[in-house]
Length: 355
Ligand SMILES: Nc1ncnc2c1ncn2[C@@H]1O[C@H](COP(=O)(O)OP(=O)(O)OP(=O)(O)O)[C@@H](O)[C@H]1O
Ligand SMILES: [Mg+2]
Image 1 (tube, rainbow, N blue to C red):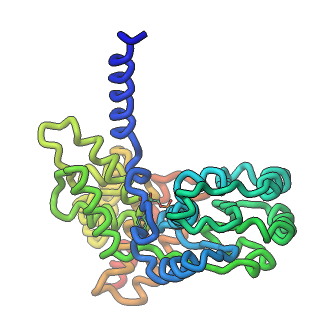
Image 2 (spheres, rainbow, N blue to C red):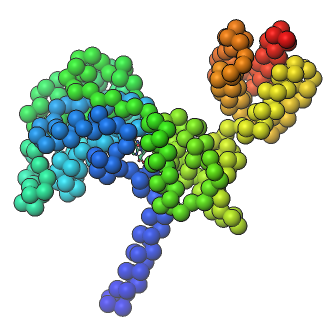
Image 3 (cartoon, protein in one colour):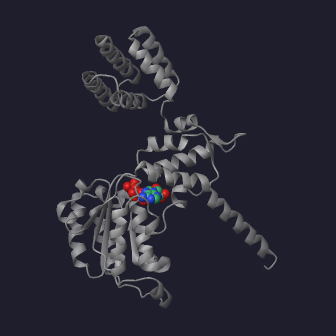
């Protein structure tokens, strides 16, 4: 047995370094403490205050994806109970499909009914360890209205021994009686400075080499969703890792995100403005043959025309209608190629009228 010892140890070491490498960066760089959560200053200040009094209300966190809701509640419970006690005091339910009435009745009730476990002396010295349990219902907006109603009673019945934290993207999908039982905390999409600081930190810690402007591009594409930004960064780094110079370029990011590279878009809008129908159709045929997605073209054209400084409001207005129409038809599953041709011809016609 003893001769196996060192080997067993080495195998364990290897496997642990392996898992650290393949660990998703969103987990690796998830804020561990409340103060590490970026850009949600107001929420964090209020939560820190409640932490001091250790008397949590029921809470409702809402806001767009990837803005720190799940990270915040996980950090909060760790600061409340410490990592050990948190295991028995916190119940996290987050699979959207496990949310029928049955689950609310069974899992939540059973957990809420259990008597609270005693904190160790060491935990008590370091953490507030209040005498209640926390139930986290992530993605609460995907619970059926019936399940939400059922939750109302459960929350009331066990309020002396539990606190609930509901998390959702769309606060309007939470039924009023439930929302009114909670303190609400809004999470904002991250502003570009905070998001850039965070992504740069990840890139530096991972020793990434990247072209100037790539991080800004990643943030542009993720629109305030830091999870998406970090995932894009990790996927890009995986792609370039085996290259001779592992540099992340704008093209790497475009290919991953399925966005059309800027030079192709510039060509497209310039050809559309020329209003030569055969050139337009030739170019769009090329785009389609290269496998670019029609929806991405529509999105990027939308951004281009709406933010254009010189085009008239009337032009933008009509172009927006055309884009909207194409978008809705694409969503309904019509032929991408034909829709794009129709869109481009429509906008070309607007250009022709403007001349
Ligand atoms: N405010 C933030 N400060 C620091 N990191 C953040 C922040 N928001 C998001 N992140 C990063 O994005 C990842 C995902 O965040 P989190 O799971 O907390 O998002 P969420 O708001 O719960 O999103 P969803 O609504 O999609 O569940 C985290 O692991 C972290 O790396
Ligand atoms: Mg979440």
